[in-house]
Structure formats: C-alpha cells, structure tokens
Image (cartoon, rainbow over all chains, first blue to last red; front, top):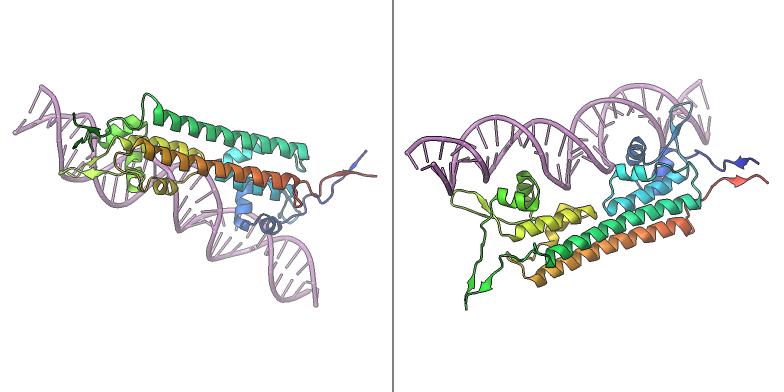
Length: 129
Length: 129
DNA sequence: TTCCATGTTGAACATTGGTTGAAGTCAAGT
DNA sequence: ACTTGACTTCAACCAATGTTCAACATGGAA
C-alpha cells in the first residue's frame, strides 16, 4: 500500500508567509532556527509543507506564553513532514502542559510572596505604640 | 496617629541584588525601566524600599509567562512605595489573569488549528484507492 | 582620615527575535 | 526569449534584556 503525497513540499516562502501572516523574512528566520523545515528545488529555492504554516501559527501563540524559538523548535523536533492529527495533538498537549506549568509556578511564587515566611510586606509601616 | 517608616528606602543596589538573587546591573536595569523605584542619597546613590525585592521577584516569574519588562512596569504603575497586602493581592490577581488569558488564547488557537475548518492536517497523505 | 568595597555613568558587548537592503538568480507568463 | 516578480545570501540594522568594563565618586570602618 502506497500513499499519495498530497501536495508535498509545494509552498514557497511567500506562500507560507501569506498563509501564516508573517513576513517572508520571518519564514526564513524560522527555517534557519529549526521551527520549520524546507527542501530545496534544483534552483535552490525553499519549498515547504502545508504543515509549516501550522507550525508557525503554533509558534506565535507559544511565544506569547513565554516559549523561546529554540524551545519551540525542540517541541517540534520529532514531528513528521505531514503530521497526523495525533502528532498535532501531542504537540498541543506538551505546549499546554508547559504553559500550565509556568502558570502554576507563577501562582506558587505569588502565593509564597504574599503569605509565606519571606513575605512581601515585611518592614511595612506599623502604628507607633 | 503617626506611622513608623520601618526601614523606608534603606536598601542599596547590592542589597536588593542579593535579596532578589539578580545581578546589580539587573537592579539598575529594572530601575531605569520603571519596574522598581529609587530615591537618591545626597551622594547620588540609589536607595530602595524592601518592596523592590518583591517587585523583582514578581517580575522574574511574570517574564516566564511571556510578560515584557514594559508590561510589568505598567502592572506596577499605581503601586505605592510600601504596598499593602491588598495592593499586592491586586497586582497578583492582574498578573494571574493576564497569564490565564494567554493560556486561554493558546488553547483556543490550538483547538482551532486542530479541528477547525482551517485545520492543520489539510492536504495530508491518504491511502491510494 | 585614609581605605577600599561598593556605588555612579556611559559605552560596548552579547543574545534573542526578527527586518531591511543590496546584489544577484529563478521561474512563470507573454 | 524576455520580462518581471519572487526567490537567494549576506550583512547591517533594530528593539528587548541584560552584562561587562572603564573611569570616577561615595561612605562606613579602622
């Protein structure tokens, strides 16, 4: 049983840029940093999978929750050229887990600062007795 | 009824650096960007409130969830020199809300990408019939 | 009152995440 | 075959978030 490539590596830098609403320079930047992958044509031009668009869209929201481009590239590391919904699901899960962990850290630290032994309001003004 | 200042503006850059576990250069950086406030001694040296330590500690965890130094400075904008626990609580709440909003955005976008009309797995390989 | 650890400023450097521009190549339509 | 828009690389630049260095000032302890 064979599979049909179904539009494999057809998108140019400009195509990806338009579809993911980022500048072409950003598309090249993401490729050079391993967020997306490309093959080259005989004439040395990049060609991307449709999945590159998705990766970029995910990368943008991931950046908003504090992930670096490097971390995002690692997140996408084992992802195949044409990821299955299950693969996307795993990536999404790892991303949400990471973001939840950071939010939990935020809450923990804030709680510690507000009520812990080393609390924020030490040395505050007190009524003179 | 008067209040006792209780260590108002006594901390040097080095004191704040040690207490908040950042470099002295970072303390100066945060002051220059409005994350913390200082008064100057007659000899032009910075003096900080204890609250500066807390601001920096909050700032560090806030950065981990994607907030910029500028955004953090805005968050601290109305905060008094010696904030009450209520003021800290408000700041903490605004911070957590912002982080939750970003996490919600992340979930929304991921859900849209995974299952929406403009889904990630369009053009995927299919068995040849 | 002198010492020197710590403070000050300013500029240069580093890293991350890109954008812009120059100079040249590719490819798609006529 | 030519034109023209989109592609290529490389380098310079930008903003954010700091660090480091030089040159000089301060201030608390002996």
